[in-house]
Length: 230
Image 1: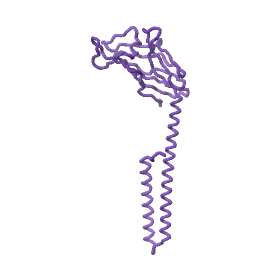
Image 2: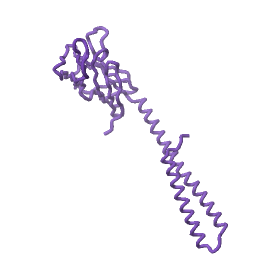
Image 3: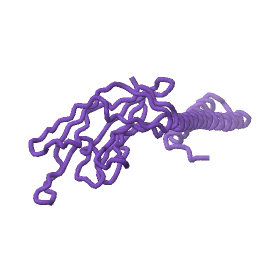
Image 4: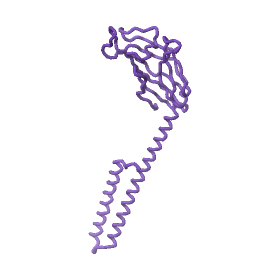
């Protein structure tokens, strides 16, 4: 059994102090009003005191156990939800047939169907300038990618190419020019670029979720993910 939290211990101690004070005060008043000490009365006070302490302990312990059980139920429900929900990420693959082709892809790596999948926000690609073959300075905003082809459905384990979707791609810095191989700018492996992306989707019960990720030269990393609440 886990150790009771400090708040529970303090609550138990407080109730015991209050109860002892009330019993002590009642015993004092009874003795003051009684002309002679009453041994039976004192025994009764001790019995009442012991009974009260047991009741206080039982009440607090029952409350603690109920809270612990509710916590375990919530954690179990959360784990079941994680195991059953979809989980969509954004990747860019280099084609094996044509090494000059780069394919932006939505992939459902979760355990359920993903509905209404979309890239939620603008993708800003940051790049370190290269001068005479060497990198200089810090990452700066270089390119903007906005995908606006609507929403998609992805089965468990499905991959969806969005290469031919509706994209708005711009250079947002005069020091960087767009390449004809535009999606190569989203392929960060072995590059000097990185960017963040946010994907939103729903499960079969229409609960809404999100994934925030970062793609950099070292790979793809999940920054945050979870359920969206209204």
